[in-house]
Image 1 (cartoon, rainbow, N blue to C red):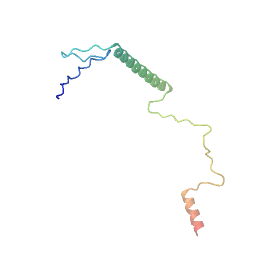
Image 2: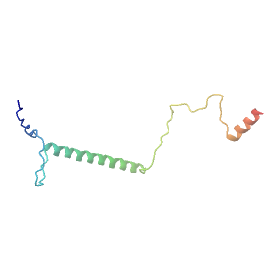
Image 3: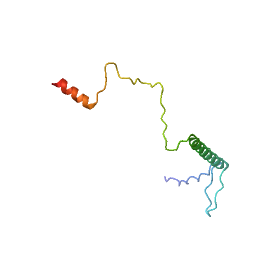
Image 4: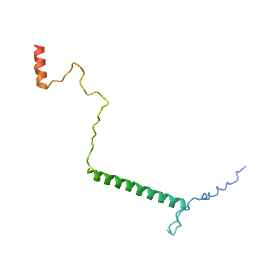
Length: 105
């Protein structure tokens, strides 16, 4: 009761629309329409980003700002109250030292 030899599975054919590997002689493989479209989209996106960056830089220069300047705005109504609480006040270090000495003795 010997088992019959099993033939190896045939090699799978490339899927439809899949790029075949480059020929052995080193000739370049032509790109598919989808790849060409994708490359064109990437180039267009890079060009749009570069134009946007250039416009932003130009706008800064028109306003007289250098690229290293930080602009800080003042809020007319801050979200927290900045006035000290009722009945409190700050003392300078020399005044506080004198006050502690007076109250400790």
